[in-house]
Image 1 (cartoon, rainbow, N blue to C red):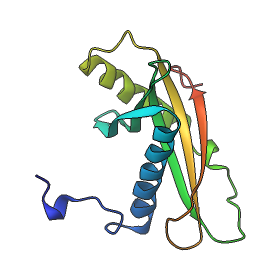
Image 2: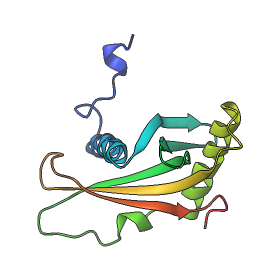
Image 3: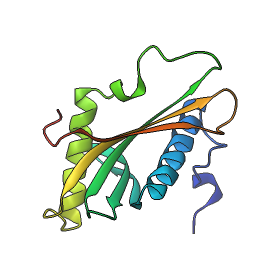
Image 4: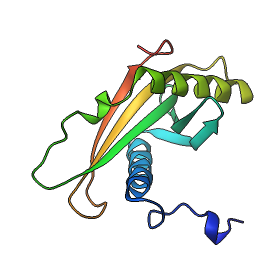
Length: 143
């Protein structure tokens, strides 16, 4: 049972947290439509976190997905593309969390991939997001 004060709905938290949660939900729906099964969300360890862990049904590849989302005012473009906002330090934290996830589940023999999904919301609300998927955006060395 989840207690009401522990819920992480879109309606609670800062605008940045709301956008992040809406982006993760939109990314999960998108990946599901593209043939992925969501295995876990917001996997957190001391050394890092992974937004989504999915399995590509066709190949059995475990995909560790970093989701980047922003609300963009109408008629404006972000100065930096969302897929370029993932720093080398963030990549290292995602890779470290992915290793821990695989060890805990005894899945070290599975093929893996690190993807990025960007979600851009235009104007008010979280309707009609623009979603882009970058499979194999970086590898286990962070490149």
